[in-house]
Image (tube, rainbow, N blue to C red; front, top):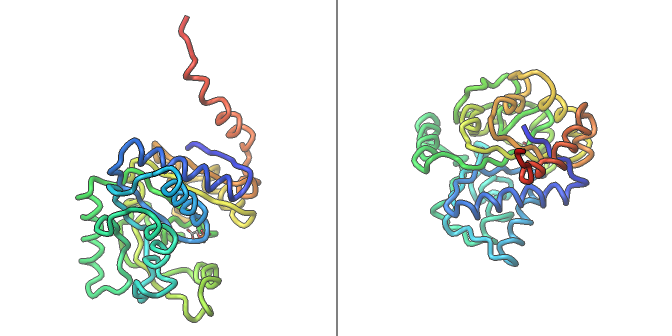
Length: 263
Ligand code: PGA
């Protein structure tokens, strides 16, 4: 796992957007896995800027979102479909046919979840998966206790997650109880993972998932087993890491390998 510690939310967002830009430039038809929540808003803002000012081209990019609330139609202003169009898709030249956000209103849950997994496979798998992390260590809506090999499915949200997300709704009563989410196993199949986290509130869980044991009680901890995972943090989110100094040192010195000469 590569850990990059930035000064603040703004720098974290710019660093994450740079990594996504590199992916799109090196493979214009990249398949991106995308996340919602408060954390990635700045990253999407920066990607929109790159599109408008630098011509970053999304015309061949394919996207799959991690999750969606069950019961919310795409037109609901708290649906993740709505979030993605508001914060990214409508501002860039993405082909709407290439966008996949799981549906929140589904007749046959099991058939739909299998179809979503198949669509990811048909697209060639996810090249780069962007993730946030919940206060309880969840990635997507894989709450503590989710199997580390789980696939796309319907889950019940923890009460704490409903409380955390109530800030986006008029009241907690409006927060759905269920969601459709990619599984931990689905996420682990992405070729590259980029997890972002900011703020003091995430510091404890960030230290736990990076430096603690791998456990389904903190589903993000399984990323320790991913061969290509980058974590971008701000100083506050990094404040409880035991090896913060070492991660910084490694990052600052990583380009030295380019000048390395065998004698
Ligand atoms: P947040 O949510 O970005 O709103 O903090 C992260 C998550 O729950 O995955």
